[in-house]
Length: 157
Image (cartoon, rainbow, N blue to C red; front, top):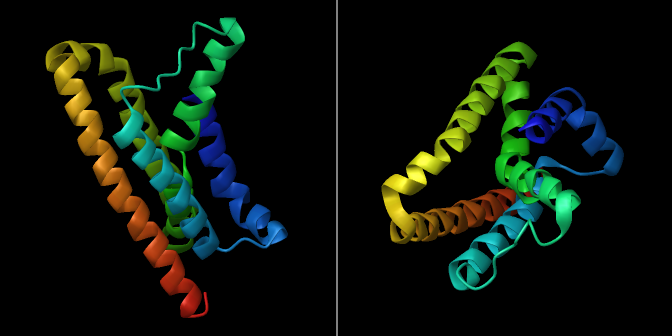
């Protein structure tokens, strides 16, 4: 959560500068992020039961890295969140975007904190089913991001 909040706040205040220095547009981010999310969702749909990352096998350092990648980045703060932060800042300003961002991070934290209880309630089969449906939605969202990015590029954005 610390990684996700830190990156989100950095993007809010310095994202436009960082992206302009790198020559990256919001549409580039949409297409690139959409492709990454599409690969992740397809991988989870096809191989989610076979390929599990065991954070305990690599020692304490690997255990800590799971919180940063893939949980903090790109699952909590990924391309869609980064794009939303930039667009919201342009539309509503810094303070409303920051307040919204912090509220969302608290909700994510509460969900993650409750995940053991949710997992016990749904059971192993229910958790796998929810993960597959979520991956399907993630695939659809990623395609929408790619489409929006390409259409934005065509329109000259």
